[in-house]
Length: 405
View 1 (cartoon, helix red, strand yellow):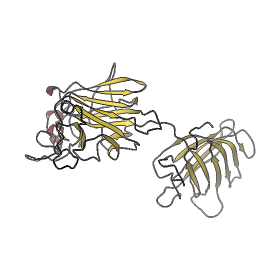
View 2 (view 1 turned 90 degrees about the vertical axis):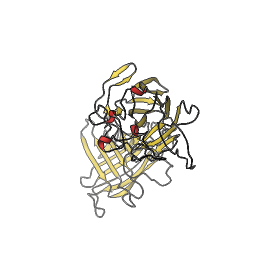
View 3 (view 1 turned 120 degrees about the horizontal axis):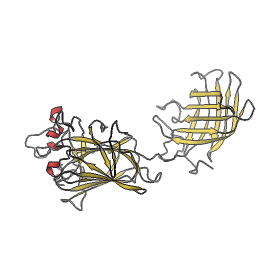
View 4 (view 1 turned 30 degrees about the horizontal axis):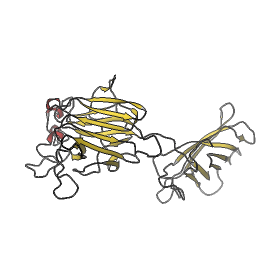
């Protein structure tokens, strides 16, 4: 993954406000163009094919310039490739060194005063694959790759359509965090370039892209604009795009639970410390019981309901008959009424983690469970958490997409 907070930052202008940026950008998912060979004409990006992170769905891409006004000219360029003397077909021949990375001062193929050591926009990072607008689309050997990728020194734009990210699970928008550029030059008539961010429920925002100098590298950080469905990057001449960092929408996920098991300080045999069991849904509420076998305490509720379903790192859920694409492996729950040792007036909060079937075997992590029980004054009377020593957690896809049934 590219470190897009490493390169030089500058004040960010989103008309009409001015924000002076400091600190690193949030990087959940990144369009980094890796996984695509140089010369690829790009009409779509996805996880592992131009996107690094956990993005689901695709980002559509179209590029146009005055050479190719009606044909997609957005192509991949390898900024790290070695310098070749008098190349016939080379990704960075002598005309391309201004978009090489890093700059030659840092041992790379890049050439230009804007990227030199000590420059405000020194180019000291190997970017790998980047995106440019093509000067030609010649493919003599028919391998579906442009023979000699190079950026055209003419006006043009690249459009990114994020509406297919998590299609059907959100409003088709993302949060744009930061964008990285290479070789935006005023003295070649290439500034002011700009980036335009659009969405169905937000006003259009325009961000100016200032002069980096020849081979200069810069990142616009701190954008953090939510509700973006489309991004247009406009160039007035040559230049390149290194990366776009974005967050996927955090739309609600839905699930239900069946579970039962025990915790016993890591020991499966013999008497148990705690046993528990319950089901929550469908609909998304149900019953729960926990027994502390050391103290004899017992908590029981018929009012437990799910409050959130999320996806975290690690294995799971992999429940039998699971809906294809269902990735929720942690569910949070609460109850507003329950009995503790057969006395009313207690509440609970907790969570379960489904690490896949079978738990703790066949490469799966171990299922986890936690619950906290409080009395009417908020005092904790029971608290259990940890990995299961026996039993199973199963998180299931929803029957109906509602948490309130």
